[in-house]
Length: 355
Ligand SMILES: [Zn+2]
Image (cartoon, rainbow, N blue to C red; front, side, top):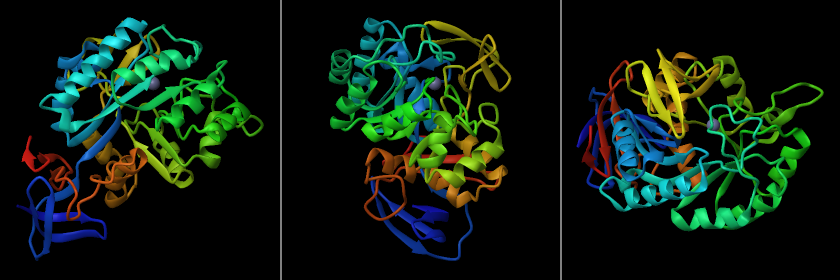
């Protein structure tokens, strides 16, 4: 049982939260206590705590444990572009981790690449491939792939989008040089989201609205990185007005939670300096965790209730997960309790205290 200010589907309510593996009841009572929110869901995570997904099963499990301490009770293990055999091994590791003790906190795979623009790799290692349904089919057979980020201007991209959408994969546009029209054709073919909106895509110009313009004009869903480095807070507030399903992601890499130094990002070695992770002049993922994302969004003027829902309910809906993302009877007891300053005090995964 937890006491506090519980975020229910009808707003905050003071009371007692009864739960086992599932939420059993919410009992209103004039009690004080922490904020109790649904566990955060992070659909773009490469690593954390010095380890990363590309290392295989142990790296995936260490990443999950690190982010659990920050209130993330479900994540998509996110790959980076790599030679195909390494990508295949990483996917096999993720599948094993999903069958292991921390599988409860793994939602599947986000394949960031390999079908990316060679000109917009950012800090992605230099192993992009042209879209190829046979390669995609092979990768999909190795682990439950839920999201694929690809560049829609590449030859064969539309065919691949159709192929993936038919298999229930959420296709997102990212690491792309596409213009507005090319990107719009991808949405009309079945792509549904945008990867780290504003970063590694064509920007908005009033005569060439680009991928950003398309997302703001007609995007239903998009990821955004609210770490204060990748996107200006004003651009986040603008995106919130335009995109109904905007949801924060960390894009965290191994360097998250670690002292300044050099850390792996797939085949690259990247440098963490204070809050940033860099590959030369390029941001190389983030050190963000979703509890910090919550604090940032609230500091930038987003109401706590809305920020919390965008960190839990929205990504759950995007992936079609109806058993989590909010605190209501029958839902999974994936919970995060936070103090007045929105620091994590307790985390529960299917009713079990994990932090
Ligand atoms: Zn990226």
